[in-house]
Length: 115
Image (cartoon, rainbow, N blue to C red):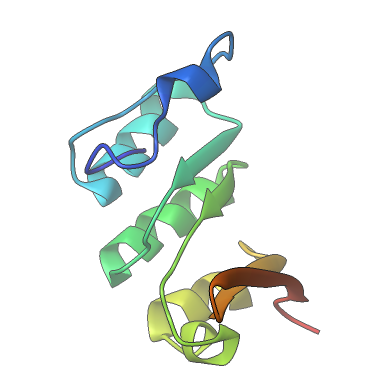
């Protein structure tokens, strides 16, 4: 699900079996993909609204796994956003990979979302 044509890089996906939904609202695309394409995994970026989270939860409840990003200052600030908290509480996300800048480098760590 690539709402603004930002994450699909053709060379990286050459030879992969994927369906790309491009240039449509993310929540609607997740709904369509779940109903029509029978995906195993949906990849999207920047979960930003309650409507997107609602469609993600519906998709997850039908057995679809999700890889997604969300912006914030740190894990706690992201995990406490109501729509993200709902996804974590419902088991959609088990782990988060948190990246941050350290000088001119980007460092990251894997965090278990829920203990």
